[in-house]
Length: 266
Image (cartoon, rainbow, N blue to C red):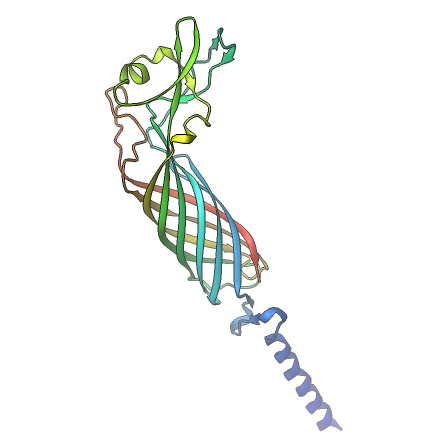
């Protein structure tokens, strides 16, 4: 009888271990040290802040190759600003149009937006200790970009008339830069949409990755890293003149970023 009881207990213990290894949804438990559940796919939505006051949104879809390695693709869109941009506001009312002035960026001639398609890899360096632990690793990404260059318009005041929308053309420096007292403010963002130019390019990212609740069904993470964008063709954002000291335009844009991610694993 005693031997029978021992054999039954051993069988139950073996069945329990087997049940821990097989889960619905094609998921498995990582064998070493009770680390957690392995998922096959991950989908996250991203919100990122980057220097020098850039912002972008994106979506990332990944496939887990192993418990610590994920291959992914991502699509994002955001703005790219010049480090020398400074906002000003005349803070006055135009009596003809009965409107209050808008803030504007002095010396800005174009607005640049980037649509990025990236392919990358995420690798964890530390073990995902326990279900709600923090996993530390790195990620890298590269891929094509499409720059959207939109002219930046200013409202210029005239004598006894409503302000008119003016863009920088190279030969109107006196109106756009030298005579700042006539600048009423920035034009509406929709002005110039029909003049958007396309600039092909490439981008690359490298980041330190912090995964919170590494084996939760809800994916939560933070990335901190560096990003580079390079575009072909003219992508001048600012006007280079004596009244905009230190301004230099380049097709290469470098920035630091923080990327917040939240989504789902399955």
